[in-house]
Length: 294
Ligand code: 3HC
Image (cartoon, rainbow, N blue to C red; front, side, top):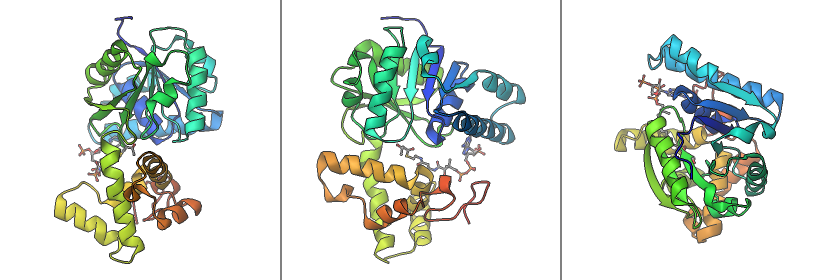
């Protein structure tokens, strides 16, 4: 296994998580290639990263020069074959097992370096299933980031039964030493550590609103002022995306069959209505063009 430091990174998907992951890798000085399926989605992804870098400058976290350097480290493509020389690929597309396994099967053929690490930012899909889509599940690992990625310090490192010790060490060194994130390790159990605890809490809050027990505003206010959470559970659900919350709940329920993981009807109806939260401009709250809630 290579001890070469990872400097060529690929990110699959430039939605809110993929864009955030690409941003932190570029800010850390890695050469970052980002895949989106169409040119339009790639342009939207680039805009997402540049907007966040601008925010870094306006809040004094980045200098103009650092922003330029980070932008310079980023390239976008709609051709997966361009990933052949990557040393680490982090997949961050939607929580859909069939689509993710198809991507891992393709990456396995495209990424030529046998020591390259193939990682997924999945929040709930077993890493073993993604590994088994490849010819070498030893190089497949979970690297689970948190939204907003530039702000939150954690990466959950999820190892399957087959992930090799070398791949774990390389992924941990990249997350900690290069990106400056704190790492916790988790076994390959649906929801890992954070979502197994967080998602039942979010679902309980949705059930409270659904049952007319309290308004979304009051539930959020209660948790912000009563427990010093940075945001309440309904606003956090909007931030994560209600489609993603549902997808994680479905996976947790499928694995554990516990009623507390079952998505409530209100969540299902909101997803069907397209009210999936901040990214859609409408969830439990409405959002303006600048993302502020109203
Ligand atoms: N990019 C860069 N910096 C950002 C940012 C972004 N997208 N969003 C916020 N920031 C920075 C701001 O510049 C600010 O920095 P400062 O304090 O030094 O000025 C700081 O972060 C706080 O931001 P704001 O002042 O704009 O806003 P808030 O104080 O309201 O914080 C928040 C916003 C960071 C989102 C905070 O409310 C928070 O941490 N909420 C909880 C988020 C959370 O729990 N995320 C985990 C979700 S679970 C997950 O992602 C897993 C998945 O599998 C579901």
